[in-house]
Image 1 (cartoon, rainbow, N blue to C red):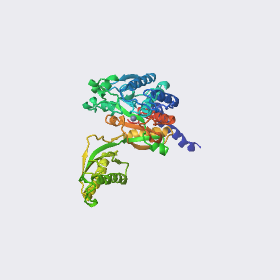
Image 2 (cartoon, protein in one colour; image 1 turned 120 degrees about the vertical axis):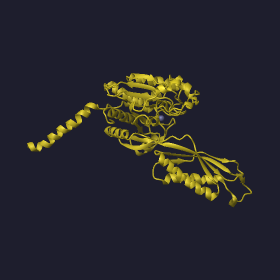
Image 3 (cartoon, rainbow, N blue to C red; image 1 turned 120 degrees about the horizontal axis):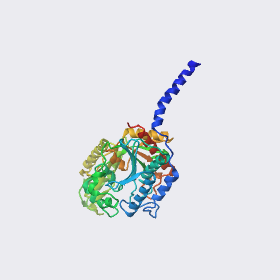
Image 4 (cartoon, protein in one colour; image 1 turned 60 degrees about the vertical axis):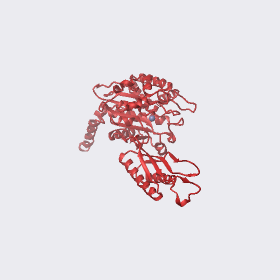
Length: 438
Ligand SMILES: [Zn+2]
């Protein structure tokens, strides 16, 4: 008997040894308050509400400025100490038990595009505040400081996160935003100081991690019925101007076999772009989105066509590979039709921003522990998180967007999906605080 019991006794002792210390370091995660989250979503939606049921809360507008005050109030209610950095980012901070440890930061943005919806950005800021609120009301003390951030002017070009990572170009301050104000005046209007942007800068190593909760803005999760997207990274985007040179000529007197029609070559080119991007393995996308024929008259054979080419992927090498394959196709078309095709890369490229692999694992484990399904996926849209990858291990959590609709008043994410995202965010924060990245 005794001998029989020995293994199970040993097992019991071992499991106590293994689980007790981790239990002591990582408290059980309370569940998000779905009703409270919904109420905060509805309340924030009043700032800049448009007749279609969405919001036009463009950065630095009166609606944005009023909405930011609401966010500060929620942060204070959640026990956070609130400040606005010189870039206008709102930061609510909660001290940890060890003040020497780098903080965990989470958040998103509350500005919208003109004619936007009630979830893009808002879910990540209100969700992060809900995490702080849950910790506050349950009296859960973290070892590390926790910072909740609402970034300035995300939709106008990731302004707040660029400033926080020391990468905002000086010229950007003079850009006139949808609010009518320049970014410089806008930052001033929300309590920042555009002359002292370097004070908003956080250095690599200063933050333990950054994590952003966001709606997917695509239909992958919604269509597959999966709860949580673990974002592998934000895709890089490259643009080219593509010019086809043919010969403009009389559309009535030039026989069909004596033409060098630039638009016909351009049409073949557009088909080739689609064919190349579809045929290569992977999730790259390539698009011809803009086209202009010259001289542009019904009775003239087009002598020149200028069009756009955009390629997106998670890897720079893949973007280059797709482009080379497209250029090879273009050469064939140019030779066959005797219409040279040339490419000029535009200086607006954004490089792919992969998330931190350990962060992906922590988020995936957090989803599983919350009883949720998850999948790895890229983000086809830009986010503040892509800037934060430059200074901190960064992760992103996606929740489903119904029908994949976004940047529209029809944007919608169900209350339980938002709560799921917050539960994963909270468990991610607790896991990092418990040492999962150490
Ligand atoms: Zn967003």
